[in-house]
Length: 108
Image: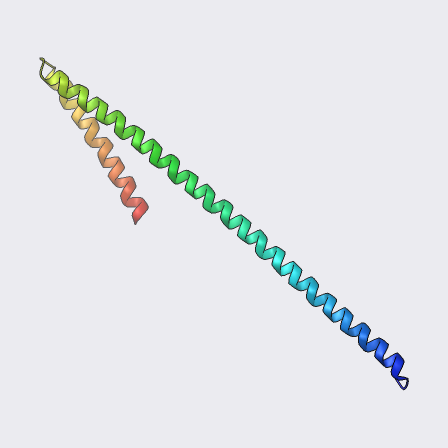
């Protein structure tokens, strides 16, 4: 490379190629990070939706149990079959145990 113009051309070309590669790598990395962020946010949204639905179902079940309990108490003033009341209480205890077990398994 004796001619400075030819040398300047090849140096400029090499600079442009390297800058192009670095820009391409930076853009690829940025798009990759954006894709990861999008996937993480979708996963967080899915988990949030699951938690909301679980809580709503649990609250609905609690309301149903409370309604059943209230019905038993109001009927309790009348002559209610003792065995039926015991069966209802056992069912409620079983439900509460399963809820407690589910809570323990989630927190542990």
